[in-house]
Length: 466
Image 1 (cartoon, rainbow, N blue to C red):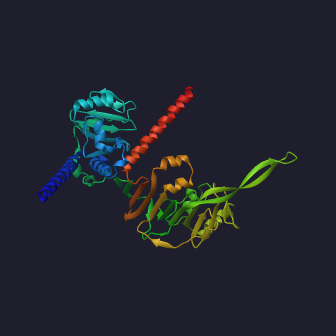
Image 2 (image 1 turned 180 degrees about the vertical axis):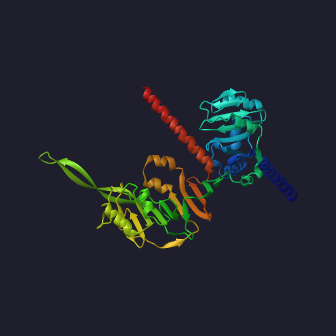
Image 3 (image 1 turned 90 degrees about the horizontal axis):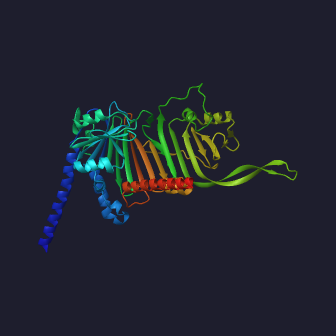
């Protein structure tokens, strides 16, 4: 029995070594590529890591996947019978001298006959043969040029002429090894999707019920606080946000006209110093006065005011500013009721908003009795944002919001300063379904949304023709 177990264990270890060795070999091969030396942005899609993550998810939660979702990305592409070899990593890049939204990529051809059948008859995007081995979509936004071993692709919304560029890529002119380029940082990353250009570096990973995103980028707009601090927000809030930083934007010129609104861009930069926070705690009932008209006994049209209850969000916003200046500004516009602190609806429409100012802080709130708590706690982050989609949908009964955001549970974003003029942003998007892979859920939501649009269009066409 012991001998049998030892043999079984040895076989299992050998299979694991072969498994990881195979994927390691594919990664080495995929990263041993050349890109044009004029590349100024590079996107890497790690197909193997995505495949392994989804495969593990299926093993852990098989009931979460339908027949179509059980297959990995590689299998789904193979089912199309494109004739292309799907590498461990797919690289998509843009080039200097071309539009920023023009992208290129290359694939090896594994089966010439299958590829020719696919491109001429089975392609999901109808292609027109323009020249020998050169095809374009009808709107000229998608281009394909190939030889016996490789196909070069380009997507260009600007409809640029790209055949010469694609030919140079196929001929491997002016190329550089990925490991010797400015994008060598991407080569050994195991993240599902990674991106780099001259100003930013990003990574995205899809796990069960979660998407993690990080981005390091050059910052030219704000100066984060050297030692960030913030008010402690209610962790149960529907939406919470705070920012501890100064803006580099210029103040509006004195003779520049602006809309008399406290929340306009001009007014904000005029009074804002270095801190702002926003919090939507829950839903409250606000009493509004609705003006209507009716006829009296003499058939005269008279005004009638009716009190009406309305469900609104309990919102509060705090801003570091000279409270005396803001108060005087509101008074000069006749927009502040000094006895109640209410701001006129012409300045802030939709809700009744109340103003409080003290000790270099102003507060705007939909609840008159709200008292500002100015105590702050230290943080490594100068920016924070969180939204609870479940509460947002519940407190905002709008079908469109529920339809678009009903898949998600929570979004959280943080940002910190890591170098001079450089920021690192990290975010986490949680799904209601914590067991199925986030990418599969996104694709399914997109597919369902597309199908609903097609069904709606079909229904409209039928009603019109009737």
